[in-house]
Amino acid sequence: MTGLFAIVGAGQAAATAVESLRREAYSGRIVVIGNEEHLPYQRPPLSKKYFSGEMPFERLLIKPASFYEQAHAELRLGVNVESLDLERRELMLSDGVRLIYERLLLATGSVPRRLTLPGHDLKGLHYLRTARDVERIRGELTSAPKKVVVVGAGYIGLEVAATCRQLGHSVEVLEMADRVMNRVVAPEVAAFFLAQHRSRGVHIHTDTLVAAFDSQTHNPGLVGAVLTTDGRRFPADLVIIGVGVVPNATLAQAAGLQVENGISVDEYCRTSDPHVWAAGDCTSHPSGRYQCRVRLESVDSAFEQARVAATNMCGRSADHNKVPWFWSDQYELKLLIVGLSSGYERIVLRGAPHTGSFSCCYLKGQELLAIDCVNNQKDFVAAKKLIAARAHFDAQKLGDVRVALKDALAV
Ligand code: FAD
Image 1 (cartoon, rainbow, N blue to C red):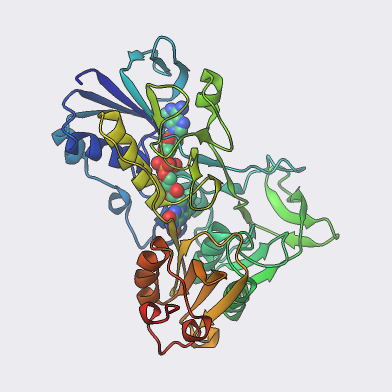
Image 2: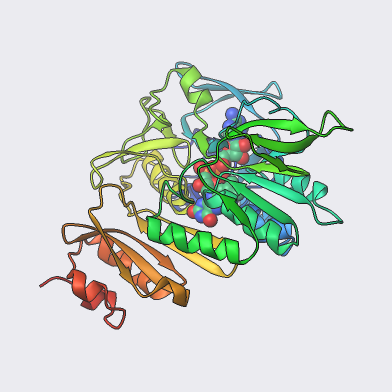
């Protein structure tokens, strides 16, 4: 194959796809089109060390510029793909260029879910997805301590809350659910993180639904407070909203590709068009293991799907069935999650949360579906293998931290 392979989106998945295409000995033209002006970069530090200023932008880059030069991959950065014509196999770019591809990889990521409440267009309201978003937020956080209100206590909201607090700002977190990280972790783990934030002076308000954003009295264009449905008013110099993401499937949908909670792909990352593959946050895929379609928002999944898509684009065969994993850093706490816990029947804790290092095991029958490891790298490493092998456990041994995970198997 020597035709043009195009990659739309220059993020986590795109960088891996370039590497994998060349590794699979594809020698034709590769063009990567990304609407951000940067080389592909890692997003996780955006709410962590890049936000706090500890990590310079250069360290966010997944690969240096020399990598793309050596791989003879053409990068068209700061350029949006406006439309896709599946029949003509043509991409229309915002700079007026039209590209005919032989094969196409869509790696368009996801976009923050937006709140459209009264006052949603005031200045000082922020979402966090790109390096540019962080720069804008940091620009408003300079000098004196500010009053930051974070809407949403998911990973991103809590990571941002931790970082803002560490930078010396006062932080209120408003969460509509009855606990933090409610979509992903068990009440025991949520309670642990809630206590950790509170002990560091972050005020977390659960069961709290935002109704509107109010402006400052003397500056009507600028946010001054967040109002909640129960009549409370939280003064704010700055609001950061982290209420989830939606897959960026606009281009695919307009082109007529099948979309189902993201661009619909199979385990080979094939879309409904035989010349188009998709990878990363923008996709949903069938999971034999979980018996449902799954949409993942994680670096590991973006990398893995990109590798699988690139291999298949080169005419070889690879499938995507890895057990997902994810991490979150809040203060000195590292939360590592392996597997998906939905459908679990009981929880077994390994270790006591008050020690600051423990794991929460999600069991269905005797099978370990998922595990949340807090400052516990050892369990994480072992669990990755054991969950992949669908290992069954003796709950009593599992709950005994003196017994290594691999020795807690059911006989
Ligand atoms: P992206 O990296 O989002 O790249 C998609 C790119 O495509 C974007 O640059 C987008 O602008 C571009 N694009 C979209 N449409 C077009 C178009 N029409 N034309 C041109 N370009 C287009 N994951 C973890 O596993 N652990 C973490 O700790 C973690 N922390 C995170 C913290 C933050 C603040 C954020 C935002 C995400 C975090 N994630 C984390 C999630 C992780 O970053 C994503 O899962 C990952 O970036 C997905 O990679 P991707 O290539 O699918 O999409």
